[in-house]
Length: 307
Image (cartoon, rainbow, N blue to C red; front, side):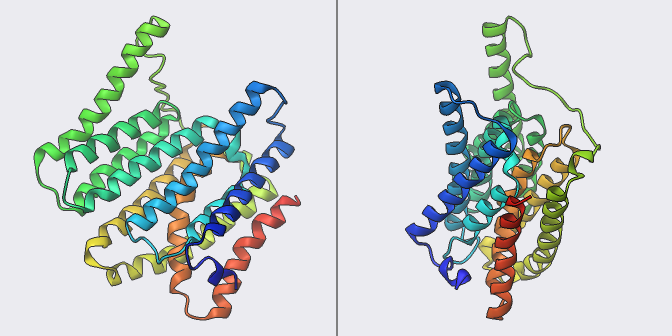
């Protein structure tokens, strides 16, 4: 019943996802005291939630536009459940904004499969990733995804390999110019902070142990079938599926090296992981197993609410 409910795109699905995302925000407010009732704080929190929910909708748009799953909203449900499992994502508005910009860039990268406006798409993607790095430095890792996409689409024109650097240079020069005007220096807005952290003590709690186990076990299991089934997809869409998986790997590396680990860094994993797992769910033929798999995904965030 649960799987069939989200197997087709319906307006009520978006309402459910909105309510789950809102619940995740309220959990973050209650558990981590991130809110004091003032006009400014209410406005800021509303903007944070709006950006996060728009990210969810953007994932659905990317999936639908590029046929990355069947006609349904399973990835929406998974994304909102991940938010509920790790409400700490609301603790860092910069990561939420950075992730939203990365998703916009991801949309442009995926759209390279259509043979038009490649130069514009490459510039937009690199500019957006550079912009995202101003809020969270290590989101710059997704710059690699542009060149992976060029390899997958067998692009050999030299200018197409140069354009991403032009986009990155553009956002750099704009940031330097704004730094000079606003702060009378050259680099205060660039946010160049390549420090890494391998202290995982912050994850030494029951919540994070359960969440990491869920992401690694479900993600690894789904990835095996996801990669195996890529060759069954239409040839024109195979590169897009591969790009999603590479994005998942990059996000995993980002989580591992994140200098400050408080859970918010997991947000970069949510979109590619939701797409990969939703694809696996679609391939399960046994109805009882599919239902059990989804129930487990639903049950884990609910149980974590009680911790």
